[in-house]
Structure formats: C-alpha cells, structure tokens
Image 1: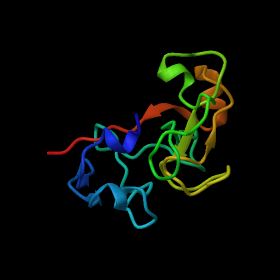
Image 2: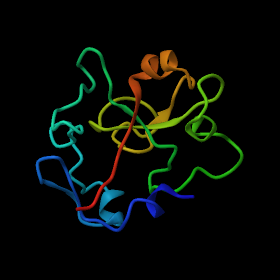
Image 3: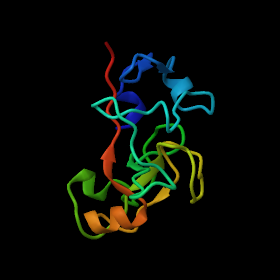
Image 4: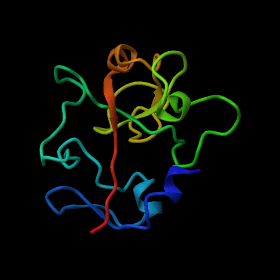
Length: 135
C-alpha cells in the first residue's frame, strides 16, 4: 500500500501547532513546511540533523517522491520494517539537506546501507519513522 494512502488527507501540524502541509499533494511537494526547525519529535524537540552529532536526519519511508511505493521487486522497506539484516530502506531527510539521488527530499533521498541499527546509523539516521496524526 502507498504511504500517501494511509496518512489521511491533511492538514498536518507539528507539535507546536504550526501547519506542515495543507493536503497530500502539498505534503509531497517542495512547498511543504518540513524543515529542521519545524519538524519536531513527540516531545516538541528538534532532532539532530546534518551537521549535528550524531546525525539522525535519515528517516525510514520506503517511498518514492510522491509518497507511493517503489515499484518492482526491490525491497525498500527492510522486509516491511521487520528486518534487521540484509536489504535496504528508502530514507528521506527530515531536514531536507544531504546527499543521495534526491538530497532535499524528506521522503525519498536514498537507500540505507542496510537494515541493521548499525547500518541505519552509519547511513545518517537512527531508524526513525514519521508519525502523522490529525487532530
């Protein structure tokens, strides 16, 4: 199933009530408000991004730029988020900066080195997911 079909229609707000995106199309466009300063964790705190130590900017998505599943037989979800060994996960950059094929993408920047915690951290993340909730 496509991630964009599971997250509701929006709008979405951060922990502090700031609107991140109006609707699904806005969320998957360059005009959304997903930035390092605006993307807050469940405690209302900023997460370390690129340039911070440790870098935790990679987030697990398994998605393409438009929020749809990657086509074909390649596994981009580490065995549907249950694997911790072989494979790779498609990750995005919550701070919208970094490397990869789409360095400013929050949901489809590049694949991880592997599915283990060590490989996820070595790629630039910590195995974090985005959670979407609508009030």
